[in-house]
Image (cartoon, rainbow, N blue to C red):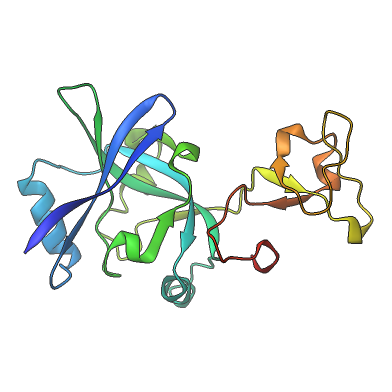
Length: 196
C-alpha cells in the first residue's frame, strides 16, 4: 500500500512546514509514487530546496557509480512540491526516488538551514522529479569554521579571542575565515568531523 509519511515539522525561514515522503510495502517505483502524488493533487515541483544533508553509505556508492561525486555531508538542491494549507501552514512533499525512499538515501541535517526558491527560478532542478537521483550538488558549502592549530593557523573569533582547538563557530564570526578550517555546523552523533 502506498502512503505519504510525515518525516519532519520544519522551519524554512519564517515558514512552518510539514515535510512528507511517499512510502509503501514493497517500496513503490518512481512511476507509482508519481501516480500516487498526482491522484493526491500534486502536479509537479513548485519549489527547489537547498539543504545540508547527510548521505547514507549505500547512496554515496550509488551516486558515485552514477557519476555524481558525493561525500557523507553535502549541500543539495532538489525539487519539492508545496501546497498551502487552510491554516496558513505549508505541506512540503519530497521527490520520489528509485533508491528506496528519499529518507533512506539522505537526511536533511538542519531544516532551518534550508532555503526555498521557486521552480521557475531553477527549472533544471525542478525538472528532476521522476529521475532516479532527483538532486543536484551545490557542493560542500560549509557555514562554520574551526581552528586548526596543528596547521599553524590562528583562526580567531571576532570577539578577539581564540575559541580553542577544534571548537566550531559561524564563518561570519571569524576575523579571517581563510585562516580557519571549513567544517559543517552540525553532524550526526557518532560521525567524526575529521573523517568528513
